[in-house]
Length: 118
Image (cartoon, rainbow, N blue to C red; front, side, top):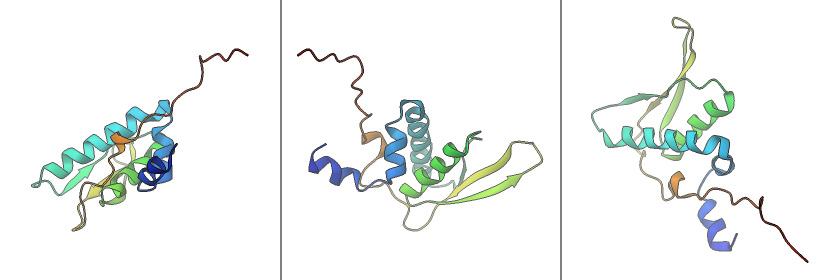
């Protein structure tokens, strides 16, 4: 990675960069970002609720994605439907599109399948 790329990535939470470079989590993280972008575009909606994520790793990622956009997150226990806690997202005055969108971060290039002959 050149110095331009690392400066670009320094604007993003290292946790999110690592999650985006993991093929198992990339699509889910990008879906979270898309949900956040739709929420920001609809100015009449003041609160957004993420879908239930069974893994604590993905729940942490949801908080971090929202924070990347300057949004506030809170957890609301929901024992009624048995789904566990809900992650609610609300706007703050400083909520906006960041300088670097998560979808702009390229997936990690895999070296598997490359054979080196000497």
